[in-house]
Amino acid sequence: MKSLSVVELSKLYNINRQTIYNHINKGILSKNSDNKIDLAEAIRVFGEPVKKQDVKESVKVDSPSSAEVLLLRQQIDMLKNQLDDAKERESFYQNQIETIQRLLEAPKPHMTTFTDQGPVQTSMAKTDPEPDTTEPKHDGLTTPENKRIPVPEHVEPEPQKRGFLSRFFLPNG
Image: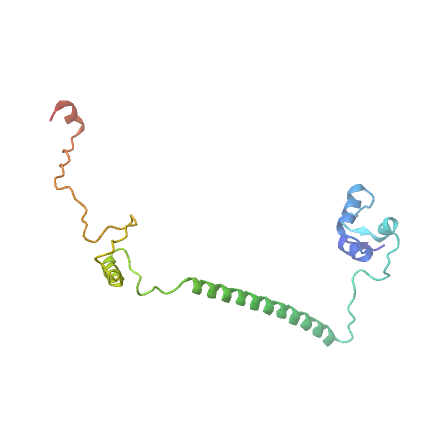
């Protein structure tokens, strides 16, 4: 009798492979030593198959060129799928590049760094209509232009480092 694999049996009877595995695990259906199921065993459990056909559908080959044509058509379909995938990837990456370019704007000419605060403050003074009558705003983050930060003039020198033995033999000096 003919032996069938689980995949072939599921195609023949139009049932799920998991159903076949469940029947095997429960002991309702048995496998041969080559892990295939005998067709008579499948007929006993599932009955006659609805389709009366061979499990492996044979391709009608009229001439050697028709097999080549079929193979070439399959390859063309596969290449079309790969081309479509590549186009999708390309458009996705192009969108990513455009998004990143929008996020990365060129530096503006009026922006200053921390060290270039002088020109910004003078340009701000020019924009005020009456500098004498308005008080400068203090946000607590910047200091006024003329205010100086006091620096202590006298700094005590660090005491000379002493070795291990000098700590015991010269305790005060």
